Image (cartoon, rainbow, N blue to C red; front, side):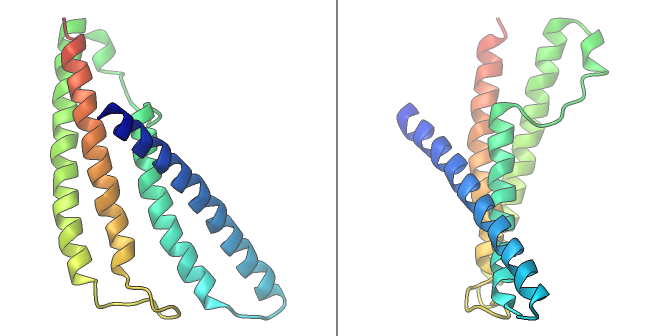
Length: 154
């Protein structure tokens, strides 16, 4: 199970990196082509699709590695056992929010399945599915964070 999780984490980082490179390339290509008065609207639509996927999957990469901004101004002054309890409670709140995001993201993806981009025949639900996939991945990461926090509680 751990090998599968590690593989998924590495795949997520690779997909984010490649997606970001293509995102930058499409936007740069669009700017260059616009300078020569050549309009290619499909690359902006594709860049928006890649932006959604890289942003949401990147959020899980940052969440999993502890790179998101945190404010400990209040909690650093309270006793250590209480800090750990608050940490676990915050993870549970985050988990509940992620479950809601996943549920409503699935509903949104189902509602958007018939809508397509203006310039390419790709369903717009591919964008909204990025929210669902990232939320599911973050749910797994949060469950593992809760588990680690409980095991470290001793």
